[in-house]
Length: 333
Ligand code: GDP
Ligand code: MG
Image 1 (cartoon, rainbow, N blue to C red):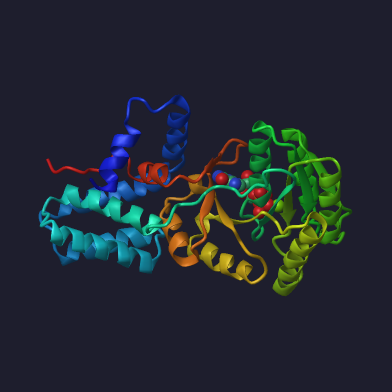
Image 2 (cartoon, rainbow, N blue to C red):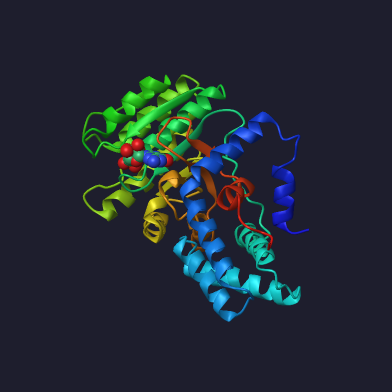
């Protein structure tokens, strides 16, 4: 049985509990725009063809590319679909859609375990650094993470280490207050590493178990920014005895391939351990997740579907593909 059939079976299983359903619904509504774009285009394609030929596959490639899947990934997925269709001698266009989703699943999972777990210390302090260019949703995502961990009964501390942009510290303070977590701030234009230094010390002394550090998205030059980020991680290492447990890079889904290029720039400075993909609700090009996997090979750990505090989900490949393809025509009339 292919992935798609298993997915349907799993997701429509009567026994899935309320919590699972709630998460599924978040994916389905968060991916509204992307699904509409993707499913409508597939339906339109299916309506125009009566049999599958090379033109059909070319158009399929275009649909994937226009969903920001990435050119190479799109070519790979369609090639795998083409092979499978040939092997199984399939002529039914609906069945091809099922195979397509199977191949999308494989393109992401690719025999790896899809690791989305956040690496936290069993005992003692875990440090999460959050990096990314301005405007991608760093501060908002930090607030969401704080809230999530607080609800899970962790003792959370924030470090407002984006001291470069006027107002950034104030913005984080407001979130900290709203969520009800403590925060360490430096003076405006303070050395961000000194803020991190103070925060790690406080966290150790007062037995916080998660410290989340906001960072600048832009300083005078790119080199300065990269130096600053690596310095911060050295401070974390020196004071806490280990480097940041997670360095989460925030990517704005609406920026498409640009976001992927930005990401690559950060790899020089810090060891990025996971991606948080924001603004999935605002894009119709939800295929970006597959491009990230293919071009960066760093796991997407969280996806954000809105500006509210609860609009964050641990990334789940099944739910993502379900949200992207729900209602897709899989049988010919
Ligand atoms: P930062 O500069 O990286 O810290 O970005 P901010 O956290 O200040 O966010 C920039 C803008 O993006 C704000 O208006 C946020 O409300 C908005 N934003 C962040 N995440 C999401 C999301 O998942 N969906 C939507 N629609 N907007 C978001
Ligand atoms: Mg910010």
